[in-house]
Amino acid sequence: MLGIFQNILSVKKVDIYKEIQDKINEIRSRMEIVDNLFSNLSNHDLIDACVYEKMALTARYNYLLKQARQLEQNMNTEEKPA
Image 1 (cartoon, one colour):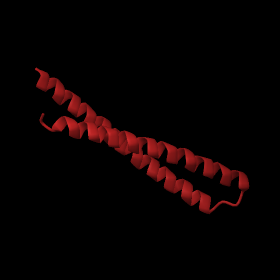
Image 2: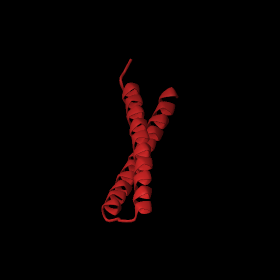
Image 3: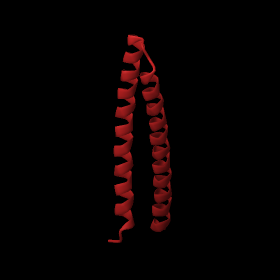
């Protein structure tokens, strides 16, 4: 019975990991868009907005990377037999 619950938790963690990976990819795309926009702007207010957007995206990106690494380590630890 315990094995069934462990399998369910494992599947749930894999789903969460895939969701985090999707979010990371989305943020990478948004960062590329902001970079391209920044390169083509001349208005100082819009340049400032791009800088702040890039900083916010970078913070979110770093957070998600840490979450993915932590979840990956957790899944790898559970896979190893005691």
